[in-house]
Length: 283
Image 1 (cartoon, helix red, strand yellow):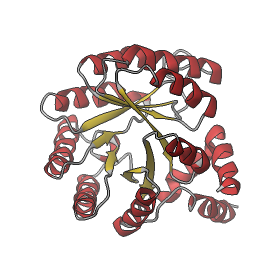
Image 2: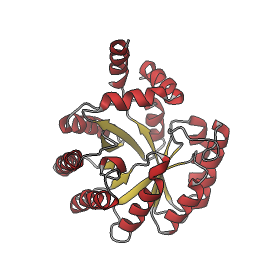
Image 3: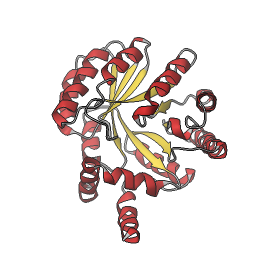
């Protein structure tokens, strides 16, 4: 049964996973760039408890930054706190995060900090705010479904930070998160309205067409730079439509050896599973 699940996951995962190597990631980035979209590259890996794993991830990002710098594409990278050692120590996480930022800064690249489980939120935002004092090439991902996010977003926006706003995929209890899609969508638009004119920039990262239409109306009177983002291989037709309307669209491109665990986790999230499977037949 597990073997069958892995085979099915592998078949579907090819839709949104670029491959296992930096060369695979760059090929996907070049393909994405050729369609007018902006790649955001993420090396898969999380919940590291060994320093060697953290060091390996940093080395991969170093090579990736070098590859991007030697190409003609405009791309950014995205890292995860638990990939950079937050489970080992806060000190290691902060120093690892800064190493990646400084390498990217030398090459005029932006670094996005992904948001993970609830237990990491405070330290993740704290690290971002600390680095924002010295580095302007960084942004952070926030999850609209969490009830705390509006306050977090305002805190970051007032410091002129850059925010990539997603709906949020992690399963959280009702006291922490909105449960209905309507509630999440209302929270999403409310956050966009409140950080408009305060944040340095905002990426509207969703595949929800209704939400995108609402965001487009807000964007017409936006004082903050707003763009869109989608996952590689998902709603490509919608991304092309936005490009046709002269909108800036980013494409999140995961790659790496740990693609299977990542893919299974995404497919266990019903909304993502339905969206991804539907996209297999739409592309």
